[in-house]
Image 1 (cartoon, rainbow, N blue to C red):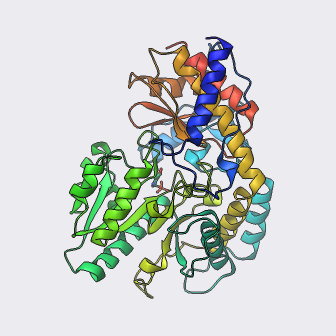
Image 2 (cartoon, rainbow, N blue to C red):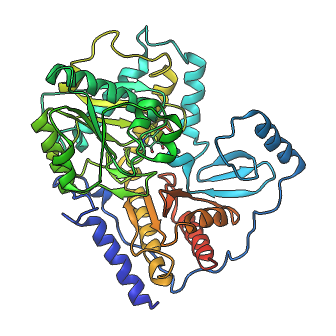
Image 3 (tube, rainbow, N blue to C red):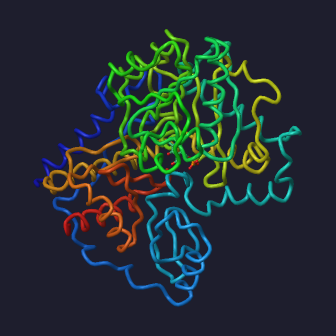
Length: 479
Ligand SMILES: Cc1ncc(COP(=O)(O)O)c(C=O)c1O
């Protein structure tokens, strides 16, 4: 492909990412900081890399690593098919195995390690807070839960989300419930919506609407709204009263969300399901329908939230008439230390009183001190700008691939910010590419039935992007 065509593609992809009212690309509300605006600066290649045609990381594990793997196979529940090496340590976007091989980690613990591995500032808080007080239960007040909750609410009011326009001066507030994981955050949100529903519409207002290709977690409630037969069927019966619609199909909103609906749950950018963004018009229709029937709208931003798309929430760049009543979050909030949370408008929070919900570990002083540190760092303007620039560069490079491999790849790049996907025409290919990239020292993930997913640390560098994409190009060229 000529350089001119490649440059055009980059410009087009950057323009698409900034597009207003383009389905699949969330519109920037006026007044929103332009940090999320990608700045196209890439040095593009003129042909796909073949530098990594041969595996460099495929030799069998050493006897010590093999013994560790065998021990796991003997004693761990075999619910994961893991590759044949043992990870030992990490630094930034890189990890090493016990046999000394180095890998570039574009999976970031499945969109978790926003600051990368072994971040010095994070470790300082971890050490200091662990030495001070680590766990108390929620029976007592501690220093950090309130501070982290306040930061989540004030950032949301300043940057937009949950019904607040950016720089909102609204007198209404919001509340936070802390959990330990994403699935628990969704359990909490669904329970709160059930209680609100009964208060608004009586005992029959209990139905929940979710969408195809969603992933909300593995506990019974979250699994019930994750309509994937592979995950659900072995564990049926699940929660009754769940209606499944299609993402971005406006007709399904009217058809499925009715007077008996208490909750609608959706990811603004579906992660595990294949990197599919919800369209602005559709979210607006969903919001309106929820208001009409008195249903609580829940956005699961566990994978796409907390600056992964370039803004605090994936919905922060949307007008307030597309916002939810509750947002669930988890993964990057404490950079890998377990934490989850539900952020909700006061209009739904009012229903919860002492004893109605709880957790032993959620909101511990350690998790919340770490969450406060991570959120303070990832919301700093230079950090957000850096992520936006790297995203533009990565999108620029990925945009070239479908032109070079038109028989293998779908056109375009899915997603926004640093939650990106390459769609493959043959559903066998994403798994193959993930394995081939790993054998060349790069971790990426599959998503849904047809995509390779890239969710690196938010402070990943352009040099890291170059290595990752060179390896992907070398792998795709060998399919
Ligand atoms: C959008 C979304 N919701 C919920 C979950 C479940 O989170 P956890 O694995 O922390 O329970 C995930 C995990 O991948 C997710 O991506």
